[in-house]
Length: 152
Image (tube, rainbow, N blue to C red; front, side):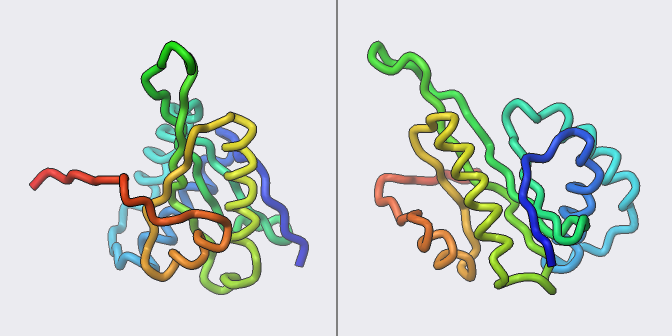
């Protein structure tokens, strides 16, 4: 199997949407019948958000098998650091039949290489319990200063 990871483009939006649909139906139990509508909406969303949500696509033998996203946010400038940005890893997904074979690690490596290139101050991830060791292996750590608020 020949596997590659690359930055995705607007031309990949429908493929990314297909992976997102697959994740929601396989892992989250979504049973909707609106796949075509979702793919159209998702493709438009990808195109509209390419400046802030950078997608990465994993392909094995020219078939899409995984994706990951780096959301980039501007932060309030300071007199010393006039350009400040942070990132958030989002929607990392590898098709179940190819998990634990290094595809997720390759996707995350591409995301973090982009974060370094963009000189992001920090990168966060909201992880499932199962994936915490995966993120810790590449240096993510629990942070006692990170607080979260959710509306009721």
